[in-house]
Image 1 (cartoon, protein in one colour):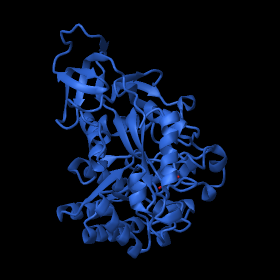
Image 2 (cartoon, rainbow, N blue to C red):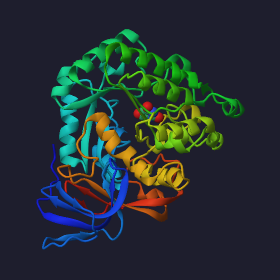
Image 3 (tube, protein in one colour):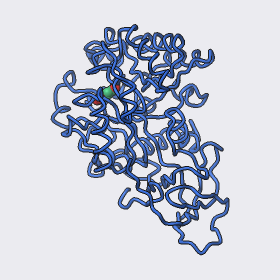
Image 4 (cartoon, protein in one colour):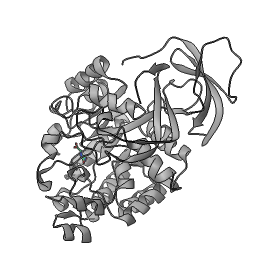
Length: 433
Ligand code: DOR
């Protein structure tokens, strides 16, 4: 794996240091040695002969970790490449991302894992972890060679974008995954109930004349997957949970001690179905944007720990693909560059959660779900950091987008809170914000 390691020994001082595990943001300074955190002192400026990077009062947090990114390479380089996707990642404050398997070819063979790993080493701006497909060609019929995928570097398994409808296939997958200690990430939407759907099913879809996907399509899928997780003892991770009913199921499963974790996207937390009245195709996503009541339940689930982390589901689609009638547009929106400012603006500044909670949901929580290093502010951890100004007001402009695609419904939006810089293994990345 690429090392960005800066061999220098130096201090970052004058920071508000965010420790997501302690749940605190305090004035402090951090000592960096060979790309790792060598020490933290709770004083503004340490007495030292070493070089000092002055953080100027910004918040210094562990680098964000996204466990749900579509990098599109290989196969869809017109939408995104590993180079452009990771450039967007660091611009959004991310230092590690986990990419999904719905490329072309699908990541169902060790050669594709190796290809992505090599391309990430050659052209990536941050650390890239690879998800292997659960089934060959994402067809839901025959499981892939998990052992070989793992040996070649895959860290998780998912057919994301598709639900594995055949319960026997998912059961076998969970059994093998448990033996190998790999999490299975499930895209929970019953395809029979969501066929041809364009948005959430309800009053708004009826008014707009668009076919809806009922929240039951997600709840049924989650319920079955949880049952199979219970049966097999495997770690099931629910991708992009979007419904109040789904949250209830995960809550009950956790109470029973079933090994289930769940992520929520920034868009499902902040955008609702009524916004589709503009027919903006960039608001078309799977699962669809839901109701205000669902959003309230998702926020409550973030607060009570039912939902473990935030993940972007960054899904680039180019303008040619999106500039078609609503029904023909592919689902997905960009997420990496807007995740932090959007959630800081909509959740933190509105008092739904504290800044340190948002930081935890984007750092130590995803790291522990996937067993990744980083994400923690402690000695011996990777010196991956994001510098944040939580109060800066700015407008997200199209020309700021680092992705190859521009499918964000948030272009022109005024945000509060901005990523000001990123360190990767102690190396300060120039030209991030
Ligand atoms: O909206 C989505 N787009 N949801 C997914 O799960 C897949 C993704 C994509 O690959 O475009």
